[in-house]
Amino acid sequence: MEAFGMMYVPMFKKHVSAELLFAEAEARGFHPSWETGCGLFSLVHKKKTVFIYYTKLHCNSQLGSQMCGDKHLARTFLARENFPNIPYCYSNQKAEINRFFDQHTPLIQKPLLGMKAQNVRLISHREEICFENLEDTFFEKYIEGTEYRVLIVQKAIAMQKKILKPTEKYPWRKHVTNIPRHEWLPELVSMAESLAQKLHMTCMAVDYIVNTANQVFVLELNSMPGLYSFHHPDTGEPVNIASELLTVILHTEEHGALSWRKLEPSSLLEL
Image (cartoon, rainbow, N blue to C red):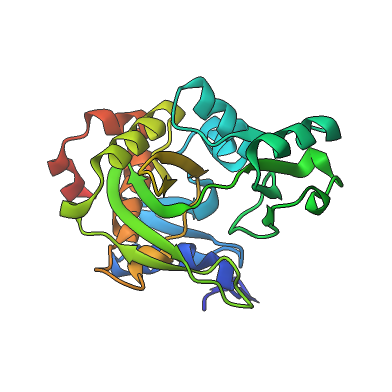
């Protein structure tokens, strides 16, 4: 661990992605230093101090990040742009929620701004619906299938397959496989890159569910996807996402996010 001034800075386990970026910066000789225990660190690049906070990357748009993090905004955007959406309901009216239940049973009830499937409940019977705090609650149709994730860092750079493998401590735990590039599903890649472009997101993940009829649905938009599982998958070859992402962050810091559209691959060698 690092010290800032005379203060010891402990890192919390939930900031593993920041630690991977920190390690990459260290390996490149940028002399990173933790500023807080909440994932903020600094480094020196071309004689300039650069601050990096993984969950608030400055190469992503604020609006895009907000739309990814709010399930209602995300579903509204997906419907407006005609992406394969999951039926959803966000309402403070019990009658409307009950009608949605009757039409789309079973349902998933989840926090509007929740993460890592925490406090997510499968609703199979009407009496299981919780009508408390509806302003912070989101409902969507439960779809059974296989989950995939496409990671975007300016373009698609990794794809994963996820199979639910819950434990008592981590009910959202999944077995993660990094899929080799030649086995990527082109439809999912193309859709993810289109979503990132429309939302002005340089780094994001798009999660999909593919049902037994091979129908694709967008499951989640994620503006702060964890890097650890790409570096340490349960199955498949590791992908060094931290290296790709740090390159993008430093280029954005120096030239601005829009310049990536005109960047030649050879320019990366200068970073």
